[in-house]
Length: 155
Length: 241
Image 1 (cartoon, rainbow over the protein chains, first blue to last red):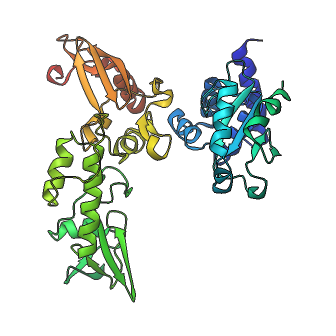
Image 2: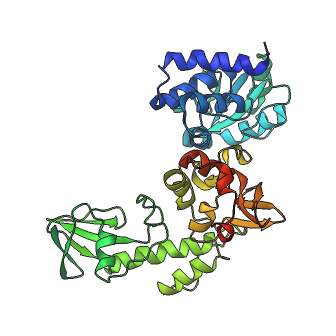
Image 3: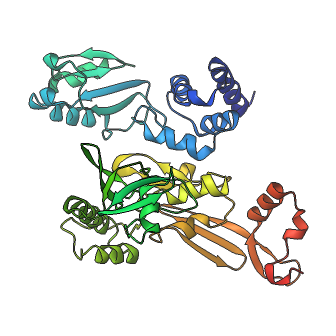
């Protein structure tokens, strides 16, 4: 099966879950993103065609929400909390150390597609600050020295 | 009909009419940039702000999107309204310092300089969405849209290069209030340049005189929409019988 028809099939099964209803666009895009880890261009085009929504409208929605990514993301998402409580406990230097270890800028994905590094404004776990969230798992009291061993836990 | 007061004058207006339309009909000028009779009200530029008093409550609203109502009192020139307009135009002056249209509007509002740091990107787009609205509501294509958000917001083609839906009609160029979208016809090719993306389209030569007179995709679209044979549309206006 060619890659494009595989995309068509995957999108089709996602659309069926939502009765191919236009008003479920965001939920559909969320499912597409869960499937591919990002929103591939072919997938966006397929969703637009199947739901009969102009491509520009789907693209507008896909670029509006931070939760959607148009670029392939890493296998692990690393969110460094930059909220006030974490900030005063040195979140900026944690992020800097992360960028150095991964050799990427905040918001980007490592070349080997292992990590996607992002800064977030508050994860609501201020007592644990500085907090890093890896694949949804909260890791508290992170220090600059703990960054390297922390990242070595993931493959 | 509803009766209401505008700048102390009592006037009558049709139900469902906007305050802006009623004011214009009564020769009261309210500045706007994002209004066009061909598309629905949107309220993007915020220049048409007016004070509306309804009962005991006073609000500042966009007159282009606010419907007239019985007994309301509208003030189009209050101190607060003037202050808002001046602030808005000052911000726009900083956003597109090279735009002649913005400069003229600023002058009209008594603003000549801006306290904000001017943008250096040379982009005259004020994000009024007239282009995307005309494309969607008038042309019926929705080839462009406003993408991203916050400071990254811009009018663009999907993926910046996907012009499949665009028929190159140039409505977006025509309706743009600041000239941010450019169009050039040269040697059988039409180039439309939106902020940050640009596309080329083939023009059709008139089957009688050979003059490149319209984009191929627009003629195909017109033929499909109207049911008129494509061959009949492939003759320019001056050659048509």
